[in-house]
Image (cartoon, rainbow, N blue to C red; front, top):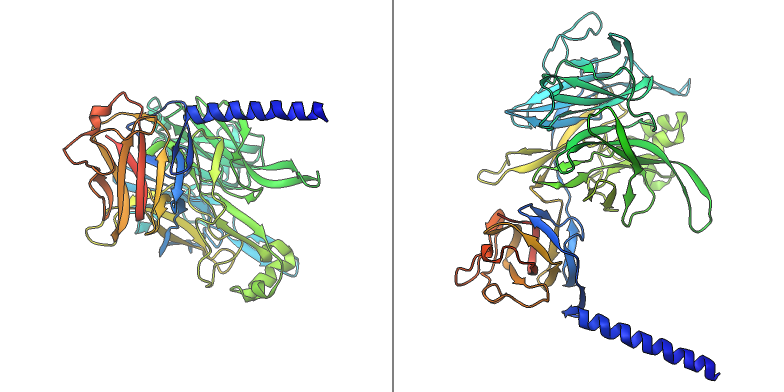
Length: 530
């Protein structure tokens, strides 16, 4: 007994020593322990509150809140004979004065007697463009023949390319190459799924309309690829990234059972878009295993160090009173005769972000919900969100621009599916948020580059945001205290923070600082030193 007591006393002594060390080397703010972090240099890059990357402590009623895009109008109907009710996998980007859109033209026909689905025509890849991101046109390009006519907007189809007989698969993605060393003949690039041979074929174009392969064989072959697979130039790492569909194997912790066939995402990098290396599976900080169809990952243009993604989530539900109450139940039952999941599978879309391209913070709540029940919704195929987003004018006169997303609905039924535009505040994916009771956030120490501090925020008329600049030990820097900060209220994507006495943050260059942010009935979306 004495020996056990002696050991316990030693443990207590060690615990007290460790506790004393932690108390000396850490600060306490509002009861929150602040562990000193290695230096972070944010330079003049915009910082969004989509994760905990810069957050050291959060207290009161403050939290990070996810925001949802607002559904708008139908901007495009895929009702041409060479399109159809499964025309999805869109790519969108701004190119000079125009907006470009590429997508699959496809029609699904249901044969409940033979218990199969088929396409009434081959898969085509089509093109549309717009001057404002809202009103879209399908130009007659005259490139490929459909039923005896070339009056269509088809830009790619099954065909011979020199020594390559292309058998296109069900998806492709298109982008403008931002690599400063890209050749004029390769100004635009694409990944086209090839079903024979199997894999991802790289394509190139000088004008975004006329396309030819960059290689005579697929350059990525380790995957399933039966969803939109993407590639793009990442200026932050000076290389191309690819993200594609594959099936993941994993073992459950509780039973040890091996699960096969979980729809997931794999990535790799390349210097030339031909030779790919560093293949790895995406990891998620605190999300369960879920079936993810698309990935829709790209650098956010206002903060290119941040990769954002909008994966389509697939869940199979059971027939229940709620399932019978969903729209178009007769057609849902018809599809179920072919495969149960065709009727009971449901899809929506999530939001995720990453700082390194492989580990993502994925929100488990839907970013694009299925919305109010109506024909063409709450089915398998809704919210295949276009890869890319556009900055477009607001419909409110005098309001700042907003982000536009494009998402599919009306999948399966009829001879057309629709693309609905969704809008979101610029930088508005998520925010630091607090109700009127108030909340507070302390950032990690960081260095910055700039003379002023600008914020994107919104408050009520009674709400406010105040910001204090501290040193790394949590001491308010004279001239930048909370009491000296001019209260921020209003709703704007760009306003400078000021302190009484006219002190400017440029005086703190080359110093490690922290921000203390106090919010009341307010949202803070982003900040930037400039």
